[in-house]
Amino acid sequence: MIILRLKRGGAKRNPYYRVVAAEKSMKRDGRHIEELGYYHPCANPPAFKVNEERVQHFLNQGAATSNTVESFLKKNGICKDFFEARAHAKANKS
Image 1 (cartoon, helix red, strand yellow):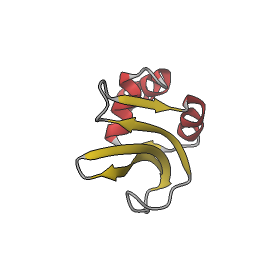
Image 2 (cartoon, helix red, strand yellow):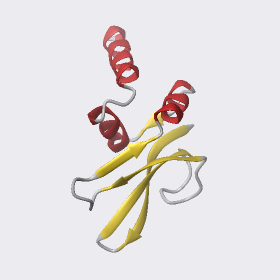
Image 3 (cartoon, helix red, strand yellow):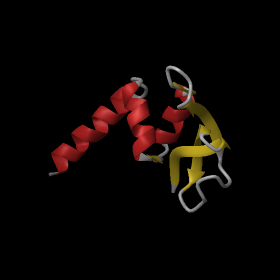
Image 4 (tube, helix red, strand yellow):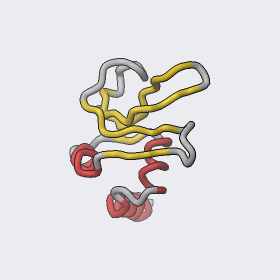
């Protein structure tokens, strides 16, 4: 199963993160399929940028997202319709 998550880099107390598509069984900073963007929490304001087309591609293929990546995508309005449709489908199942 593919998951979209953060991969940590940088020095102590100066992290940066790459948004990657990786197999769920791989380690956090291990091998990944594709790099989709980045998140720099130490920048002022914090910087978050991703390739929306590739994120949409992986989500359409059935990829899951980590809680952190999903919240960043929602805050930035990326794939908004996808997350709304998924929430609506979950609500209808109940």
